[in-house]
Length: 227
Image (cartoon, rainbow, N blue to C red; front, side, top):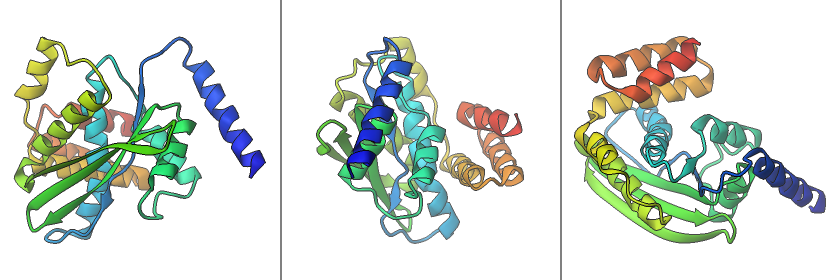
């Protein structure tokens, strides 16, 4: 146990050195758990576990005052720790993952989609203390899934004491509206990407872009998979 703890501390120290003088608060977003959903294909719900996290990361990354950990790095840690398919991640495990990636906060949570009534539960974990410092709930119809995610990101920015986005950035963020259909394809692309199925990931990214041509996250994902 002492060896494992020492390795964790050393890893965190290496990450801190690698980050240099970047003193911005680090935020890591874990995949969201399906807490019991009905009305869609199971694979859609499996995909949303990644898609919700991916879009939250994108929304939080728009704030230059935060250092948001890349989704791929989080997935790598989950795979290495064999946590990707082990069920819900508690606050202590979330804090341990946060330490491994040099984050100050970890965002975790779950969702329930009951035939179109969608609820997102979010927990903000302090990595230093392993305490849940804030719990939020967003609820609306599935058709407004992107609004749910965007509202959750705004709450998280306030809870981590991040300054508001500059006015121009706020206008850009609020003006776009990603359809739920496009977000679902994007989520499935992430799922196939994590499974190593590149052709299916490409197909899903392309479908997301067909539905919403200005989907920057889908275009970036498509470029990474092809690259």
